[in-house]
Length: 210
Image (cartoon, rainbow, N blue to C red; front, side, top):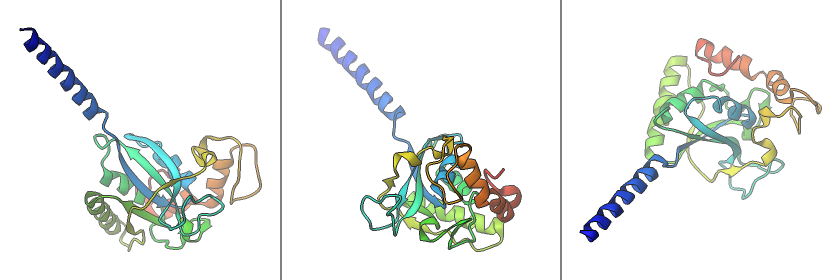
């Protein structure tokens, strides 16, 4: 009887541990490039079901890229999300409506290869969902979308001062003007014309544009 009781207790503990492991499963991740990573991070951290957004670099050959030296890489973000609250396909549909999908040379005031748009997929399911979202968005827009769906490569986290940059009240660096002490991110985003252009492209379907 003692052995039976011990076995039952062990099985109960194992079931509890298994359940805890299942409930704590790692969130799914999406990697996208949408121009300035400050802006994409700012947008997607507001989305219900998204648990974290990390700014970084991907798509190139250079190892350990930095902000001063990331030639060949895209500025990108890694979005962790709860698939029970928002699907990968819905996340990509929202992403496409937050960028200028007709511009292959950069985004808004940021020009060059580092600021091109792309969707980086790591599984066959992600590839299928991303391609479906691009096709649907192209039909809704009535234009060809130039944002490619590419195989995921190593994602390199950007320097700490880039993470949650939009929350900072002090500027560290900007492509939109001199150093400032207040509302640096807001100044940059407005000066770059991101929201104005997204609304021009997407109209009522524009995501995040104020």
